[in-house]
Length: 171
Length: 103
Image 1 (tube, each protein chain N blue to C red):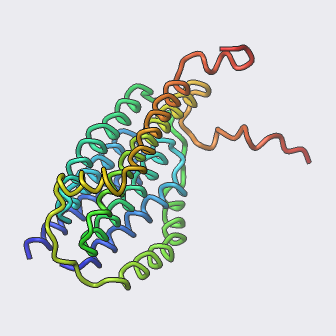
Image 2 (image 1 turned 180 degrees about the vertical axis):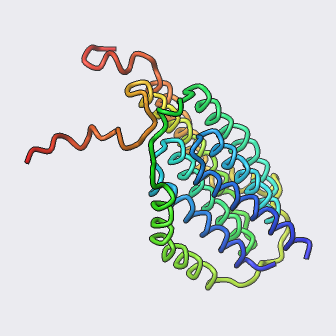
Image 3 (image 1 turned 90 degrees about the vertical axis):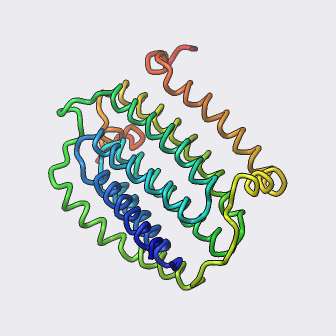
């Protein structure tokens, strides 16, 4: 009973945050809705006994990604006339919802037909995750580290100042 | 507590992200919709990890979080570059790859 109520509150947070992200015109309010959804997702991970995953979600998604996107939004500081002009936004959203509804039902039916109950297990703490990460999943771990390095280099190169002006010359 | 609720929540979140990707034109909203879709897949992975009683799902979700962080850095750098070159965050203005249509 307690789990159901915690789940309902967190699901309300996540759905409300993501719908607020979807319909707001101002970009910063969308980012706040996204922040609420990410914090709710961390609570969901804690509810699913994945403690280390909840911690990583808080640290990486909330602490780094959302804060970085908010900083970018505030740095760009787009004025009202620079925002995209979307006169019939709600019509588009309703149309796209109708279009996407069969996909939702397909995902839900195909996943929920598989397994009907949780297995009884220990909580997944950092000891279990660390042992798995360095024995069975060590190759994806290394690939992810290379991916992060190349993404860092790529982000620096793309966001550099003279990339727009010196298209013809050598930089 | 059954897994169906988590499956339902995950599919609904994925669909909200897909709707945002189709219906909106603000570049930041597109970016956050993609992040929402990836995060709903993360929720599905954590649910399966508990259903099977196996911690490998959590490990995959952890690697996915790193991929999400890399994607965020690249997408935000791309948005800054696009805003610097054309002073707007409307995704309909970036159509240079379409080329000229002569009829």
